[in-house]
Length: 422
Image 1: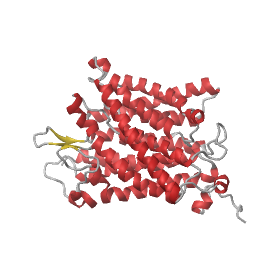
Image 2: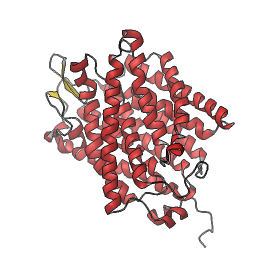
Image 3: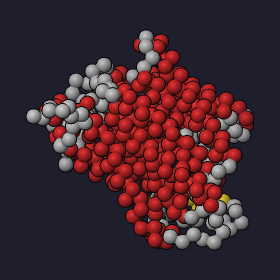
Image 4: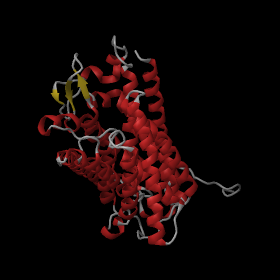
């Protein structure tokens, strides 16, 4: 067992886990003051729930050991509860549980990302039910499509998810998604759009009405997300090597460029660059570089960041034009950013992109992967959300939404001034 790589994976897992509290701060600062507890609890609720489900059966669904293409519903029954993974096989590079822990943090964060679309108006219990079902029938199978792979005893490819490995047999190249542009960001963004449509618009929804109550929280959250993202991207190499170093550098370059591009768009469009725009631009760049971090030179990573920052800064305006209330711009940042990063590889991926290979095969498989995950996640998320809304109710009462849902849902206030309750 390589103790260095094992330590690298465990540290990376800890970094990615920190991203969920970071997301809670990022989202919490964007909502109104009387909904900050509710918003942050959607992330912490996902952390608790998905952490448990992953141990019980999530890993068994996402990482079955199977010959040929991995079916989305296949389950490794021996991995239920992880009891079969307690021992490290002789000759293994790292303990199986190190990989289990690393992938658990991805599942937790992906579910938490969806919650940004339903800020200020969602019931906590209904969200937890949605999160459990969506993770089970959407995230765990999609993670299998993208992240699952196995090698034969001679080191050759033996089996794997159809997106990254199966398409190699059909097209000669598989889709590139190093750290989760499809499985995490397109997946969560599509589900967020579906829930935004199911729950409908917030009361008084229009541009300029709902403003962030705490931009310092947003900046703190973005900083924690960026810090954790080094584990997200570099850690996906599963080894402390040159590929991890490239992913690390690109995780600096792309979001830095995206931050600048977003601020330029804000300055031109609105006259002032904002702190929330800087934070959002950095996150947009992080989203876009996620699938591409190990397949681009640093210069092309900067170009990707510039494109993602500018396009996402414009994409967040679509909710006002098209009339869907994606409260915290999960669609504009994660869905659009994930699509940009995934498709960009079709042109600029080292060796296989259009500018290197002279053909569009890589772009074709990237597009197939992106569309498949988008449609699958959107349809099932809409169905799950619709059933919950029509049975248990997903949205709080109008009067509670106006008053702020922290005290109604959780019996707490985010900010209590001394003597204010006297």
